Image 1 (cartoon, protein in one colour):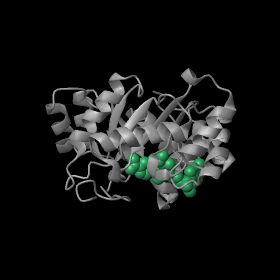
Image 2 (spheres, helix red, strand yellow):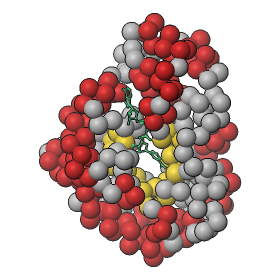
Image 3 (tube, helix red, strand yellow):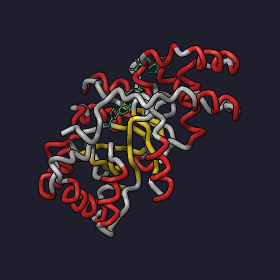
Image 4 (cartoon, protein in one colour):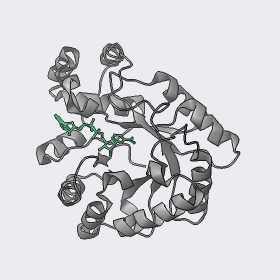
Length: 261
Ligand code: NAD
């Protein structure tokens, strides 16, 4: 799985086709979409038009909450593949655990069938807390390959990250730039960025890479799409990393996975 990918949440289907084309032309090879983003079709169009060999691409999509359950998940997966115009995805994720609905074990059994049939090269989850992950692990089958969670300098998620590391689960960061909010005006990040001759967005994305996170920033602005992948030519020092560690306030932007239903 490429450590740096491109996210398309809140991008309408037509705009997603344009944005994904820009991303592929800029060198991204991993695209993160979801049934709930209503743009799988646009993503698929851009992939087909790119002419890139399928095995050079890494495509992720997600099962939406209303489709949780065994049969419903299988049907939703077929629909996602159809919209993407693909015969397999590289990663299929349960979007949210929905603990009060409590169907994620059934959904996971459907995911294991999809995986066994070779129609998803890997299966994983999103927004799962360690308690939810433990239930899947205790089923004794496939351990999720990935958990995609909200993660940025204000929500560093040290407990889930340690749990993932213990169980061989990759941590993937959503809203890695804090959705482009006032995080990008932070003076500490600004000082580090100026010293490296980079932008704050580049410093934040570099921080993710050095922590070992998979990262999927979103932008529809071509210059920013290129800026966000241009992060391989510098390295944050131990002192930079220690200063960024202090920015954690455990503040979520998105919903709490324990109460999102
Ligand atoms: P993000 O942290 O990637 O921020 C995106 C916003 O930051 C952009 O809309 C833009 O306003 C700004 N931005 C981007 N690049 C910039 C740059 N170089 N300079 C200045 N500003 C810049 O937020 P996101 O879109 O919420 O998260 C990324 C991806 O994560 C999504 O597109 C989606 O694929 C995924 N995601 C998943 C979940 C989930 O529940 N699994 C939830 C949210 C997002």
